Image 1 (cartoon, rainbow over the protein chains, first blue to last red):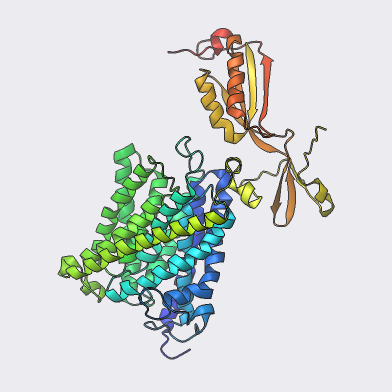
Image 2: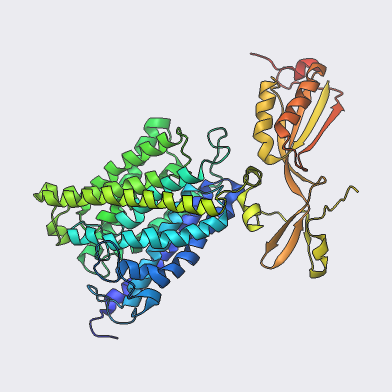
Length: 428
Length: 117
């Protein structure tokens, strides 16, 4: 063990890293339950793809651009291809840089996976892979540098505990851009497109919440007070969001809905993500309660627009992340976080630092994603044909179905290759 | 009085429902079925096992109508179900011997004619 390594911190961060990685398949479940059954596998596979693609780009250049050096806009290439990422402690922490690298990689992965919610049920798999690779470097790594890695936001004093800037606002506003560029599903606004499995949605939300304890609790990179605070706030804030969401559901439809509850869990976790280690448990509960309202209202309103931001990444992540970042500006409390007070405790400057982040991050994420997808779209079609969309993405993109019965399936042996694509009952 | 059976693509089922509604055909039932027409089979791969899927999911509409409504019903099924590709389905029209509305005991034409109240 190198000097300066704390074994307790390292043990927790190893667990936290695994918890954050679990969030991506959990998001896959959450998303897969929300789409139609013919698109189940493709929707989950976009999350799986994020693990494959973003891990590689992160190891190659993403980590370095985010966490090497103190450049204002972007980091250096000193850690490219994991050069110098070893057992020595990461600066400012008492954990090996390797663990820090893996923890941050899991953040990049889930953020890429989140955006898929805007384009499910119609975007071709190939262009999504290309988009994931480019976005993870050009958007995620840059914003992670701004907020975490020594860039202009963090060095200017903006507080973002676990990723309101690079994860939540970045994914939310990129999702809006992606939905605009890729366009609505062909049946959107004409047919009711319903979630096919509410159980997946609930199970996914539960696993996401579980993983989020690592996401927020690990973002202090230690077992110190900020981490403990963030961990406990990750219980309190989503629970109050959930309770308020029940009330909102009852006011609108007289019933508390299960998919609404699953959504509320995610919204609550997002709300506390930036603020977790900086605000008191009491303010965390208020944040959870107040923050439920805008996300709930945007989800209700969005379906009446022509914008098919299919799984409401903007409402759940963009908006809630933005509110969490702003909330720090008001209610951060030095007696709890040891770093800074907010406006409510006499430090108005903190609010300004937070406002800068909510202006810059969404603008950058939206603009870059828009340009990136337009560029990819110029090279290859972004979406499947109407016919393929009708048939379903599982069969057309992956050649598999989620709920296959096996009836009428004929085993093809190697010497049957010539039968491929020939009608069984050839009318001729 | 005829029984019209229409077998259509699942993704066209909503269009068929809309077409039937426009034709003022109000009573029908649907079921999920699997079948095979002249279409090319999908080839799928599961863990290295390649299979040819000989059956496709379809939706089967069953509509009992009085003689005046037979053509309208057939037309609605065609209109809603057609994509122009092989695999759009079939329509069968069968003579119907007897029909009873369970609630009132109405028989035949009276049973297959929607009531407004």
